[in-house]
Image (tube, rainbow over all chains, first blue to last red):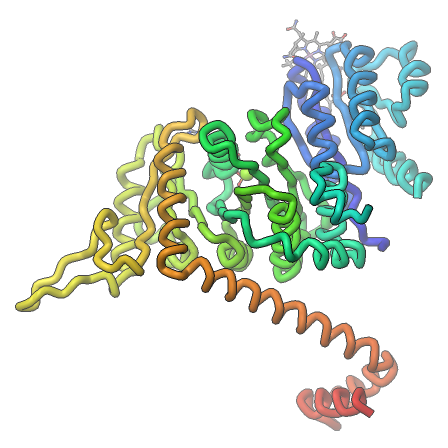
Length: 134
Length: 333
Ligand code: B12
Ligand SMILES: Nc1nc2c(ncn2[C@@H]2O[C@H](COP(=O)(O)OP(=O)(O)OP(=O)(O)O)[C@@H](O)[C@H]2O)c(=O)[nH]1
Ligand SMILES: [Mg+2]
């Protein structure tokens, strides 16, 4: 069915309290017609994987501005796989140095976005990644 | 193994996936619901409704915690938030208040967007609740924002409906709609740590008294008094009790849970449980019949025939009612 809604979990793992970006992205995705489950701050990787499972999302969006992405992202990817959610696409935003990009991609992160990222691009990339899969 | 079978075996990923199918009203979802139906009818469905921000999600969090810790019940939550009428998208934020529940395999929280159509929401919610029921959840908490018809639909679905109020929301007598009493089995004044609780309580009490004229007990010689919440004069009559809670701290929760249990007991002893169950299934059946008939009609009547009849209506050739007759007759030919 073409009107199946895209469901996205937007989560902030770790202890970082910068939530503006996550909220901006959540609202942009809503305005693009997606259903966004927002979990709030200070989520452990386990909490995020559990929420992604219960909500049967298509996309997990992580917002990390603390610099802890190289520890958090692989842990969350592993947990998603362990739960059988191999189809879920992971997007990452925040303060991510360029030199980490190749390793993040290798781990299976679909898209990475930094300060000033255009939400239109994010929306198009999510749609593109899900269309590819279908 | 079918999706339904793996849910009965306790698989959470299958459960999550079926909830999506049911929400989208897909053929796979319908097939699974048929398979699961014999396993439903065991759970206690508790609706939690009220104005935005009154603390419904925080309350659901506390209730679920209580049922887990004090009663070892398996708890499912369906949390409904509105979809944007313009884009069809939604931000579902109820989980933010339910973080205490994570990490417990006997709790399952599912967020849901209202997706516009009201009948559709009621139907999808009913379907999702059936899935949780069949999956063996003992208590199913359904959170909805109090807004007109959806509120009424959810109240019809639930066995016990809590209407949540909070002080400081313009809580004079006028502001508390008499309508809530048509759906409330229990009135909750949450945020009882805030100033103005007494006013809210007073307003609720007077609304209650106005809405229950039948509870007036007439004595001899023309005197009359009101049946109080503590001593309903007729065991068959349930008078919504008022419970005060502080959901951020868990105060008043044991008392609220007790009131919920009393209500369930009342439903069982008065025969209302079975009556509500029957009424609910009746409504569901009617809804499905309407849908099936309309679908069959659409299949049978070619679009050009439909357009022709509309053309004739526009020209005032036939009245709408005649148009209905001619299309329905055309179908049976
Ligand atoms: C505003 C701000 C704050 C505010 C946060 C308010 C809030 N509630 O969000 C306050 C003042 C509280 C704050 C505090 C701190 N901050 Co500060 N803060 C910033 C600042 C200036 C802007 C961040 C922001 O809101 N941007 C606006 C939003 C819209 O952009 P964004 O978050 O980048 O999001 C975009 C993209 O990243 C992407 N995106 C983001 N999330 C997601 C998610 C998904 C799924 C997708 C697809 C895309 C995506 O899309 C968004 C739209 O373009 C940045 C510097 C900067 N230029 O980024 C520093 C910065 C992030 N802060 C920093 C630091 C160090 C701190 C403090 C530790 C400072 C201190 N010593 O106390 C504290 C920590 C607070 C905490 N508890 O975590 C550092 C982080 C350094 C690092 N990671 O190596 C930065 C980079 C400043 C710097 N150059 O040093 N901060
Ligand atoms: N002081 C006080 N604040 C509370 C209480 N319960 C909830 N809150 C706060 O009220 C705000 C709203 O709480 P929620 O639980 O999200 O309310 P809600 O009714 O689910 O909100 P919507 O789903 O948006 O309609 C939050 O900031 C809570 O922390 C309470 O008992 N006392
Ligand atoms: Mg809520």
